[in-house]
Amino acid sequence: MSNKIIVGSEEWCALPGLGIKAIKARVDSGAKTSSIHAINISTSKREDGTWVSYEVHPLQGGRKVALLCESKLIDRRVIKSSNGETEKRYVVREQLQLGEQSWEIELTLTNRANMGYRMLLGREAMGSKILVDPSSTCCLGEMSDDEAKELYGHVEVPRSGLKIGLLASNPNLYSNQRIIEAGQQRGHEMYFLNVKQCYMKLDASQPEVHYRDGRILNDLDAVIPRIRPSMTFYGCALTRHFESLGVMALNTSEAITRSRDKLFSLQLLQKNNLDIPTSGFANSPADTTDLIDMVGGAPLIVKLLEGTQGKGVVLAETRKAAESVINAFKSLKANLLVQEFIKEAQGKDLRCFVIDGKIVASIERTAAPGEFRANIHQGGTASLVQISPEERKLAIKAAKTMGLEVAGVDIIRSSKGPLLLEINSSPGLEGIETATGIDVASAMIDSIEKRLGWKKETA
Ligand SMILES: Nc1ncnc2c1ncn2[C@@H]1O[C@H](COP(=O)(O)OP(=O)(O)OP(=O)(O)O)[C@@H](O)[C@H]1O
Ligand SMILES: [Mg+2]
Ligand SMILES: [Mg+2]
View 1 (cartoon, helix red, strand yellow):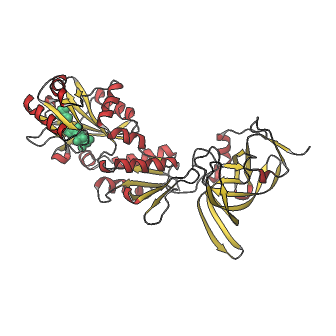
View 2 (view 1 turned 60 degrees about the vertical axis):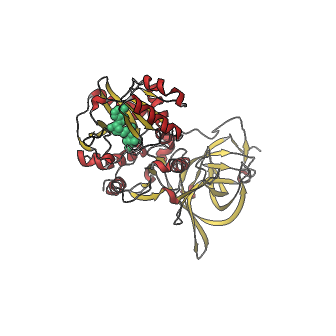
View 3 (view 1 turned 45 degrees about the horizontal axis):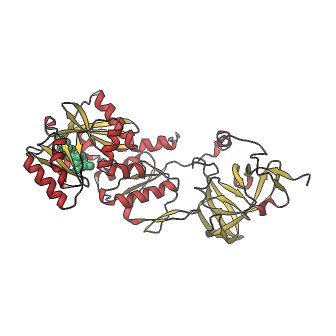
């Protein structure tokens, strides 16, 4: 008993044979086997038997330190995890170092990305060497995450570029082509992923995203969701799944979902004291008269909540016209918003492209003659514009309020000052890059690099 090591409920240990100098293990005598977080697992046959190679991210909360490991495969075993799920896992044998002592243990390989610890030390590995004091932690020494990271200083991922997936529908679209091109130019591996061809495995210990061609997409560093409105539900579910695998999403599923609901967005903006055109929303045609008064009477704008590209936005010039349009839409069970018409904007609006809390480019859009909608899809034209400090502030605050890293903020210039029209989570690049000559696609990639702490290697 005297020479047993006393450990707490968590301990820093090392697996020298794998180059793992520090990994924090959950000590759990309730579990039989030990396991380590491993992804991209593959096996190969050699003269001396089967080997398994895998990637380990030994530090919690990131993939910055990634180690390619290889071990001889000693078994495949069905393991029941703490949540009662069973999973067939590879088993390897490696030297464990705990404090001053070291001995061989068996480890199963599994994706622990969503677990609190990258390693689990079970009772089989403890043998007769360990006494657990569950009331204490790190009995063999504390280490900060930064100190642990420093130990890996020289092995930090020797990769040249990031693996970035573009979640979209049409590879021939200008915006998608530009994003792929900008990523490749900056040295990244870019993958166009058709949202419809991705599918998900929901599993507490080993969630996955599969692609129809047989690939498993768990090892991406980031995804850029460019989800078309008709794919919002599936696209957001997919983005959320990537997020749960630890893959960074340039715009989060939560923010995209939020921005796709026009009414909810306006309420959120209003709640945060951001100016919007006075708008009304009602359930019953019985309230149409008052609804029209609420926004200052005709002329007024009627907007279908589901519309994009200017479709579903109608200008009702007179009170009579407004009443019939509203009641007609209502009878079709369409959700609509009534909005004051900003006549003085004269068919113009501003599109500010916000990335990472900064405006990277802005344009003014002017509606085609006889049209009040400035959308490019409705024949609007883009031109250079100087935006005021107030407009700049409004756009940045709007993107922040929506929680969008990348946002196309539409502002209309009214006699009361700038008003927010809407915030788009997949703003198009063609109009804005062509009019301004600014490389917006690269700015998007740059934002991913910054957030992942990636720097181009200098030869
Ligand atoms: N209240 C308003 N007053 C004047 N013009 C407006 C008003 N609301 C919208 N417009 C014009 O109609 C265009 C389309 O409106 P909005 O952006 O709300 O619709 P959308 O269908 O969501 O378009 P998008 O393709 O940008 O998502 C705006 O760009 C603007 O030019
Ligand atoms: Mg819209
Ligand atoms: Mg718009």
